[in-house]
Image 1: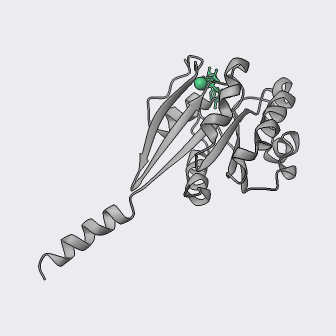
Image 2: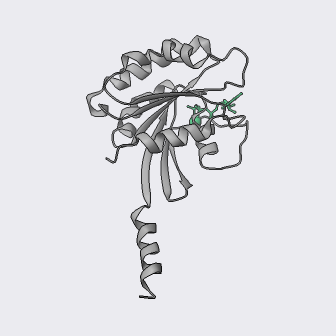
Amino acid sequence: MGLRKPFLSLFRCFAFQQEMEITLIGLQKAGKSRLVNVLTGQTDTEDMIPTVGFNLKKATKRNLTIKCWDLGGQPRFRRMWERYCRAVSVIVYVVDAADHDNLSVSRAELHDLMNKPSLSGIPLLVVGNKIDEPGALSEQALIDAMGLDTVTDRDVGCFMISCKNSTNIDSVLDWVVKYSKQR
Ligand SMILES: Nc1nc2c(ncn2[C@@H]2O[C@H](COP(=O)(O)OP(=O)(O)OP(=O)(O)O)[C@@H](O)[C@H]2O)c(=O)[nH]1
Ligand SMILES: [Mg+2]
C-alpha cells in the first residue's frame, strides 16, 4: 500500500508527458528565429543571423516538450517548407506586421503552401510579429491582408505579437497546445 501513491504519481508523470513538433515558416526577417529563441527561453538578442536551411530547437514547458523546426525564409529555402511541415502538429506562419511592402508575397507563399495536399488539415497559426514597431497592422488588418478567411480546411488562429517585448508569447504556446493534432 505504501508504494501505491509514489507509483501512481510516477505513472501520471509519464502518462501526461507530451511531445509535439511545430514548424515556423514565413518570409526572411519576419522574426521566426527570434520567436523560437523566446519560446525556448534563450537569451533574447536583436542581433540575429539569417537562417541557412533550418535549425531545430526544443522548448519545454511543464510536461510538454515542443520541437521547433525553424526554417530559412529566403526565396532559395522556401522549396523546403513543405517537407518540414508534413509531419508536424501545427504550422506557425510568421509575418512582419510592420513590413507592408512584403505582405502580398507573404500571402502568396502562405496560400501556395496551404494548397499542398500533403499539408491538408494541419492547424495553422499566423502570427503578426513586430507590433512594437510604428505602423504595425491590427489583427483584423492582418487577417484581411493574408486572406485567412479563405483558409477553411483546417483550424486557423491569428495573434499579434512582439518577440522584442515578449508580447502575447504565451497565447502562441497555448494555441499550439490546444490545437495540435497528435499525428
Ligand atoms: N522590432 C522588432 N524586431 C524584431 C522582432 N522580432 C524579430 N525582430 C528582428 O527582425 C530581424 C529578423 O529576425 P529573425 O528572427 O532573424 O528573422 P527570421 O524570420 O528568422 O529570418 P530568416 O532566418 O532569414 O528567415 C532581427 O533583426 C530581429 O532582431 C520584434 O518583435 N520586434
Ligand atoms: Mg531565421
